[in-house]
Structure formats: structure tokens, C-alpha cells
Length: 483
Ligand SMILES: Cc1cc2nc3c(=O)[nH]c(=O)nc-3n(C[C@H](O)[C@H](O)[C@H](O)COP(=O)(O)OP(=O)(O)OC[C@H]3O[C@@H](n4cnc5c(N)ncnc54)[C@H](O)[C@@H]3O)c2cc1C
Image 1 (tube, rainbow, N blue to C red):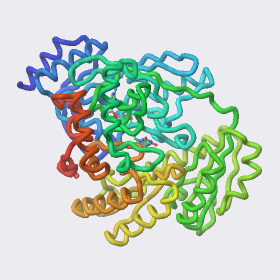
Image 2 (image 1 turned 90 degrees about the vertical axis):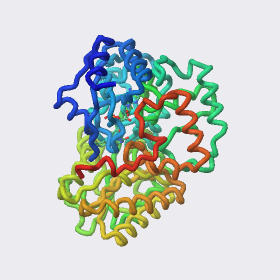
Image 3 (image 1 turned 60 degrees about the horizontal axis):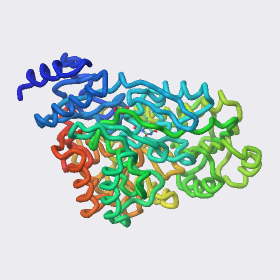
Image 4 (image 1 turned 180 degrees about the vertical axis):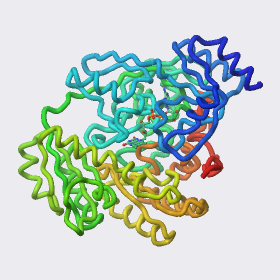
């Protein structure tokens, strides 16, 4: 079908907008990764009927449909060639007692604002802050600093309504017929080849499906490859009355990694790590030989935790903060770690995110740091590190001359082999996207990978939903022509 026919047909089919101006297509061709794919057309549906019509049209004509949230993803998950669909008009927020029903175009910022009035919050808090959409949060199984206590997105969603690749509207876990099919797959997996971690955004999370009440979780982290989510019911928590934040400096990353185990046992609400490059951007005089910081927050048992914290830490406490505004200021420093790192790396030394998001069992965190150090030595690279240490989830930015794509390939292979050996996942929260889909098979092994493919077939037999992601062997570097 000619591009002009696709555009005109879509325009006659739906009440929403169908766009193809050069500048619009360019805008939707990129996200927060270094990849670029120009789509054929962008659709902004107004109604659920519009979404169903677009998918049915795409299914009939074998054109890809990729749903996009706010485009803040770091690995190109929302980029593709065919139709890009953005649900920004699906922005309803209905707050109930212990859950909220939201449209997928709602941004995290507007949800937080609406919930704050009721003294409630939805726990997953990606560092990007208010900008990302709930669609993208569910699509990636996103998480953040408070995941340590409250879990990732997958632990905080109660119900999902979506349109599958055939244009059928489905609500899970209500639809038991579809639910039983998902459970059949969940029972077949080889669980030994699933990572032993507290957060994981790789592949399809069949390991989280234990009964019919869990079946909606298959959509979480599926990156728009199984269905286009229209709305969801999200779990809510009460905003804690008070918090306390400790900032601790350490002489080495290994000392900090070792201390994380003891600190985690005290049940903090957050346990985060930044290396030297971030602390150099913080408006505070640390000791000269400070190598890294841990941010440790408690939101319950404050008196007890305040009294006992000194006994837990092997580092030097440089800040104990109880005032909310001051706590927020220090969390901003942590949340800006990615921006600080980008600022400090020359453009020609920046590299695509590939190994930026592994997560390992917490007792293996020191080993993960050793692996990164060895990689730096072997490949003559440098790295900047920060992340959700309590979940063993460390973000790594490689600094190396951009021309060495072969080197990046070797680094990824070597790093992922070692992460998997430690019982880790190649992605704790950012997802597979263009960058990592070819490694999903390495992560889960042949049998589980085949099950993922069969599962995809059930929801999207013509493979029109975000093709090239999760069950794909596409080489990621093909997409870096401008790199
Ligand atoms: C500075 C910075 C910091 C970040 N920090 C974090 C962090 O701390 N934790 C974290 O988890 N991530 C983080 N991210 C990554 C990213 O911002 C989050 O994962 C975010 O949730 C993505 O949301 P989005 O709306 O931008 O999604 P997009 O990038 O637009 O899409 C992400 C995926 O979700 C799918 N999707 C979108 N809408 C739907 C829908 N309606 N139905 C089905 N699938 C859908 C897309 O197809 C795509 O596969 C960070 C990114 C940046 C740039």
C-alpha cells in the first residue's frame, strides 16, 4: 500500500488527528536514546473506537503500529517505521479509595498532582519525573528510588484494558478465557533461567503470573508488543507523614556496595548510589577523597531508624535531613545524575545506552562493580555510574570514542554474559527496546524465548505491534546510521 493511501485511509477512518508533516515525523522519529526511525504517519486518536479502527486497518494491511508515550525511553522502545499512535487525549483520572483509574495519556506529573490532594501516591517514580506517561511507565515496567519498598510498576497495577493486534478490546484479569491461555504459558516456563532480582524489565514477565488474578501483568513491560493499553487501575498508597534522609560518603564503591546489604535489612524506603561525577555537581563540600555517596531514606519507624542508623553505616554521614523541602532538594541531585553525566561527557565520547541498566542480586553488587572496572581496563573506556543500589540496579554510562561500535558490541556481549551468570537481568527498568531485544534469548534461554514467541502470536499473530522489540534478532547498531 502506498504511503499516501495509508494516510488518507486513516484520515477517513478515525475522528482523531492523522499527521505527516515532515517536522512532526522527525519529532516522533527520536526519543531519549541515540536511535532514529522516521515513521510513515502519526495518529492521535480521540476515542477507543479510533484505536480499534487503526489496529484493524493495520492488521488487514500488515502495517506496523507502535504506541508512544512521552518518548523519554532510553533504548528506542517507542520508535518504528509504520504508524505511531500517541494516546495523549486519553487523560482521564478517576480516584477511588485504594486505586486510581487512568487513561494512558496521563503524565506522571498530573497524576501525582491529583493524588497529592488526597494524600495518596502511585509508587513507581522514574527519575525523569513528571514528564513520562502512565502508558510508558506500564510499557517499560518502570520503577524508581521507592521501588525498594513499594515494588516496580508490575507490583502496583490491578487491571489493564487494551486493544490486541487483532483490534479486540480486552480487560485483564477479568477476561478469564484469555487469562487461562496466559497461565498455560506461565506454567511452561523454565523458572531457573529467570533472573533472581527484585526488579526486571527484560522479556515477558511470565514469572509474575501465579493465578488468574495476575494475568494483566503480562502487559507490564511488554513495550506495546502485545497490545495498546487504553486504561488501567493502579494501586495507591498513603503519602507518609514524615521522612528522614541520610546522605553518606564512602571512600570506595566496594565499601558502599558492601554496606548496602546491612542498610537494606533495616527496610529503608530508598537506597540510592551516585559516583564521583554526580557529587562534583552537588553544592556541598565533601571530603577530598570521597568516592561515592549513598542516599538512604526512611518513611516509617523514623525515631528508631534515626537512632540506629549510625550503627548500620560504615561510611561517614554527611547529611541527616528531616525538612521536606531540603529532602526534595537532595533527591533532585540524585535524579539529575543522568543529566550531570551527559554534561560532563564530550558529545563525541557519548555512546548509546546498551549496558546502562543491569540489575543483580544485592549481594552481587560489589562483583558488578568489579566487572565494570575490568571492562574499563580491557576496553580502555571510562564509566559514570549511579542508580538504585538497594535493588542492585546500576546505571552505567560508557565514555569512549564514538567510532568504536565494534568495541561497544564486545562490551555488551561480555557484560551481559557476566550479569546473567550473577543471576542478574540485562535491564532492571528501562526495557529491551532497539538496544537490547537481541539479547532477550541470551537472558532467558531457548525454551523460554520460544514461549515468549508463542505468547506474542496469541495477541498479535500478524506481528504488527511494535515489531523488532522483545522477540527479535534485529541488530541494534543498524539503527545508528547517524551515530
Ligand atoms: C533522564 C531520564 C531518567 C530516567 N529515569 C528512569 C528511572 O528512574 N526509572 C525508569 O524506569 N525509567 C527511567 N527513564 C526511562 C523512561 O523515562 C521511563 O521508563 C518512562 O516510564 C517512559 O515513559 P514514556 O511515556 O516516555 O514512554 P515512551 O518512551 O514513549 O515508551 C516506552 C515504551 O512504552 C510503550 N508504551 C507507551 N504507551 C503505551 C501504551 N499505551 N500501551 C502499551 N505500551 C505503551 C512504548 O511502545 C515503548 O515501548 C529515564 C529516562 C530519562 C531520559
